[in-house]
Length: 340
Ligand SMILES: [Mn+2]
Image 1 (cartoon, rainbow, N blue to C red):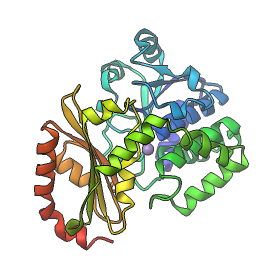
Image 2 (cartoon, rainbow, N blue to C red):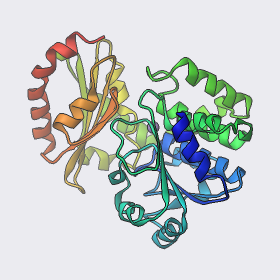
Image 3 (cartoon, protein in one colour):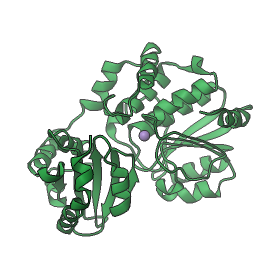
Image 4 (cartoon, rainbow, N blue to C red):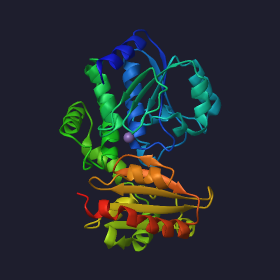
């Protein structure tokens, strides 16, 4: 975090504040870990910080310290709105545009609070008085650590904050394997372990939580794996019917796309998931090396994200979506075959 931003934040936090910490819709490990970590930290500094999430988050995060106090806007609207209205400072974490928080958007826009953004996604919007944005960062949770460091408050690291931030960094780096994982990331994580994060236990809590239904659905997904060797591309499809027969629960398909990316030689992996309720096909993109799925998702699928991980959607049928996808690939053949 640069000096100017640090100065603004220090001024904002010079006296006890009522603070709201907000994560994005469909919160992931990084959103939940970073928001909890920051709120515990701010509370330790003598502020009153509450975490609000637009909607619920996956069960594999529900063991984290502090999860029971998270306000889920979708479930407790009145409490959420009251908390937002009373806040003097609002931190927005792991997203950078207010349209990423669903129905909460209007309440944040109506607020007179000072906004602070901590985020590592591309193209941050301009709503915050202090914007700490760094796309080279592994995770927002790592940024919360650097935020504490910039404020000279790393002594406030406790077992809880270490556990929360470790979980966010671990999940957003695919367990420290994505290229965004730097030597600094490992130094941060080492410090978190020293301060009480139990890495083996956190891995178990997060990853060894598969339901039999999810494993069966994974079997279906792997059966639907298609390899387009010519383009170093692999994709997986899941129909609504396949989801239904395997008692799909939200979050069950999380990470499936990585199996496609793990096929030898594959540089670009996609999963297409039919969603009859919203009448769309949800799409996740992953890549290795220099192929930008952020650009690909922005250009063709109304989405975006990071260079190696992005999301998007299509309002066509699943079959049409696939046909169209395959028809786009030749334009990227050079990039896809000369990547690395
Ligand atoms: Mn993140």
